[in-house]
Image 1 (cartoon, rainbow, N blue to C red):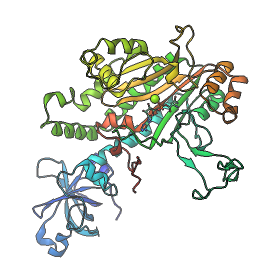
Image 2: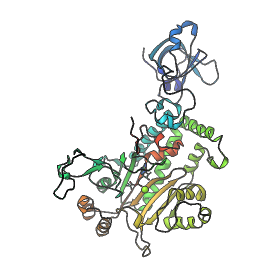
Image 3: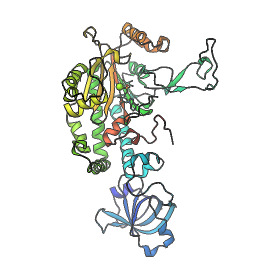
Image 4: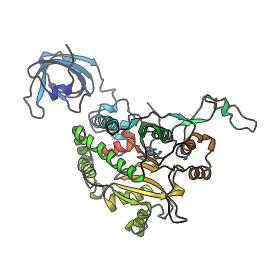
Length: 480
Ligand code: 4AD
Ligand code: MG
């Protein structure tokens, strides 16, 4: 007999027919009711067991998260809470699960605890919801860009360049790290390394994405990126996924329009296709907030906030306006900010959160940042005040998350770009091809990067970024 997935049974139940289902036991109540899930959907199937028909030895093995196969008749449910149920005729134990030894329990477990049990945590309702939504947002990303005429480009994971100039890179080498070959002056001789040069894991696919955009017009990347920054925050990973669209002939305003449209599409897609998961996650937050003080609770429920974000325009301001707002703010005047506010300094998370959560109460796009604090490839704005030069950069800031997108118009003027490369001490010979793009058939172009996990966090309402990626990598942790 062929197995039927639970999603099929719930969608179009063929009543009074025999079915074979397989899955994991969520609960077994009163030796009579099994709640079974098989991963095909968020929903579960109730199995009704007449315990007199089965040996006690078998019934004892129907434990939390054990894996079973059940044959029986699908009927309209007698009880409340589900439309259909299966009257078990045959039960086979596929995988026993001794509850004495099993690390998960059918009771509240903290996120920290579950993180250490990442090989089992996907079986919980919370994580199965999160990872289904994560899949959905990844799928929606490809759909959005394909439907809008973008090409998906695979940029390299191993590279010799440092796209962000931040220097927080993981080295890639086959040299004996204990005893590397040296040049005459004593430095490591990378010529003897596998690639005959020094290489690292990519921090961004942008620079190679620009190559593609200047040939195919509109492209996007969607791949893993690596940053060796020791940020112990709920927003940073050492290995995260980024989506980087890059478009020829787009200026910074076209870029912001695209970014806003794309993230709204992702939210809409999740609301339309993952309502069961989002309702569960929404309730989960409401339950957790019951014991919190009013001011610690979210001003809106999860789904309510997602709707709010897609129904309202994002606020668009310049960096200079943002600084002015912060300087006039209550927390600034009362000395409540930990970090200084001053034109020329980068905005810190606390400043971003004030702008988004307190001042505007909606997503904010900040653009035209000081040139001195931004990456070398960002286009210098014409006519900025001397001493207050800015670049056409933009960040999208979300409630609870802060920066979800960073992007810019790219410096397409060869001389200006070369000047920035030199000023930032970037070895020119590393970027000869990038500079070539400005010499031969270049054009104005723009792009941005969306931190995929931060977006998943926003849509699922998960507090820690380590709980929206199956196997988080962060400083001091690379288990699984
Ligand atoms: O702002 P970032 O550093 O921009 C870039 O890498 C550009 N090359 C993008 C582009 O213009 N094509 O990173 C982009 C986004 C951030 O806004 C943030 O959402 C996410 O990537 N991000 C991280 N997410 C998780 N962990 C980290 N350590 C992250 N660093 C950045
Ligand atoms: Mg950034």
